[in-house]
Image (cartoon, rainbow, N blue to C red; front, side):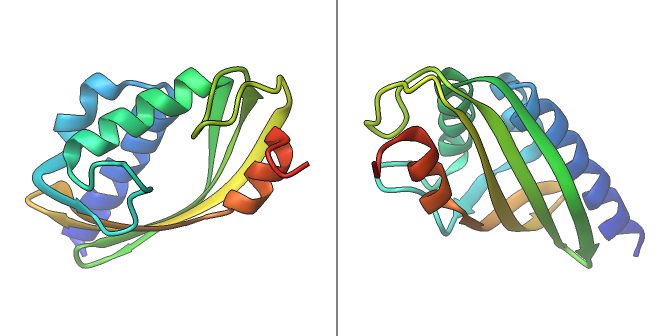
Amino acid sequence: MAESRSNIERMRTFVEQVQGQGRADLVEEFVHADFRNHTASPGQSPGRDGVRVATEALHAAFSDFQVELLHCIGADDVVSTHKVFRGRHTGEWFGVPASGRPVEFAIMDITRYRDGLMVEHWAVADALTLLHQTGALG
């Protein structure tokens, strides 16, 4: 139980500092060298560098970016989060030019930890809502 509690605390800090504040420079402090993202986007590295690139891309595409952590639960070496990402679409995102529109979309993650670092990741993101909000789907 103590290890899962520590992993939950590390995940909360990761969400706040890396995802929320865009601190891609901190990725190595939270993500294991053997990291594997099982749901990486097309063209995204499934390794640790993909986390850094995705963080930088989010903050480049969406100004005033914020993350609301709705749920963060853990058991043993697994931590799951339910989050809402918000911002304004002011930069290109996966080929979609900036629309200036506000966006808000949900993400659910499952992350496995080893030695206090994220080593595996699976996610479900509400991409359809994001595509509608950016104007990519009309």
